[in-house]
Image (cartoon, rainbow, N blue to C red):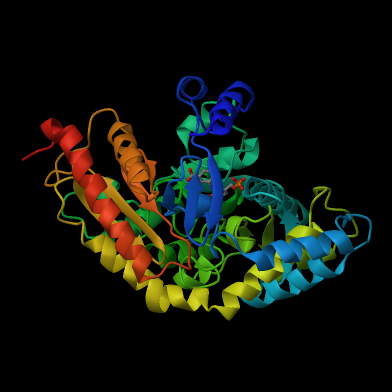
Length: 458
Ligand code: PXG
């Protein structure tokens, strides 16, 4: 490693506080320096080329190094680098993007509110949902029900809506008005002999139980990711979403689909709501909207919510300086143009999704692997100590970390969610990349097995 990068690592440890990181470990070991990206690959300061099986962080759908996106940002910066959208002003990129998103979104979601991160957009959604019920004359409807292990962001409200206890533990206390039900995680929560389908119905009925427990007149919305991402790529059984939609309709509560990960093609549809046939009132999006080249997020909002806003001659007192940032909107437009031109969304259905599923399925019989799950361009491998009984390893997350380090070293990034290895590759991947990933997965699983052989059931 060059002197320059050794120094950079030191300075990083001295001055940079990383997100979701044990800072003492950085001070002792340092961070890996990523210096460049090209297509689905990143390159580190040691010169290693690594296939990015996590799309940055569920984000770089069109891959790295797209000159067109840089050019779109450059041109827009010269034309109009920034202007706000607060006081009855607008600009061409935000209008064009809003029209385009209304065209791509499920039918009645014709209205877009912008932010710069998924967390912000979920905060927007929470405020919008509560404001909607106040305007409707039902101010008691404040409770938002979401799911354990769901992730909706790191601000206090979005973190409270999320169902991660380690996030709640740092919020002193969790913001009020959120309840969490079980997530549709058959491998972990299914009972002995319970079919996937029966489990899906039971997991959805947890919503109805919770609505009845807190009183339907107090419930504002249900919020969930179509596929739970950061919680471990938990894929709902086919019976789950239809039952959720039935319950949401029955009690007249709003449905918030957090599509920060599932939005923009990952399931082979522009939005995961289309994949599952659900009818959300609000969709939040971020990440792949710009493939991460610049921050942009937003809320796609149902006409019936906007109609209520329109019927009241008053402000919705909410917004961000960078709501509808012109450069971010210009990049998003170009990113969508690339996705359409290269048919990246359709290809998830036709080519890339099936190729990922086929490759991942080859690891079902590995001695460490309890379950392999895939849908669209999502994949997960559960590492267990005993395949037959689904017994986990002691000290959750320890073996996942060992495995993740092998993956990194061998040149394919998968993220460890405790002891579940997850992948969400860029949508541009081809068979050649899946072959490369397969070789790394095999090698890394075998190395991990060697490391923990004494703990694994014969
Ligand atoms: N909703 C979902 C579904 C997400 O996955 C957010 C909201 C928040 O977005 P911002 O842009 O505020 O980070 C996310 C973010 C991980 C990981 O380790 C996942 C996310 C963020 C950081 C880490 O898997 N997802």
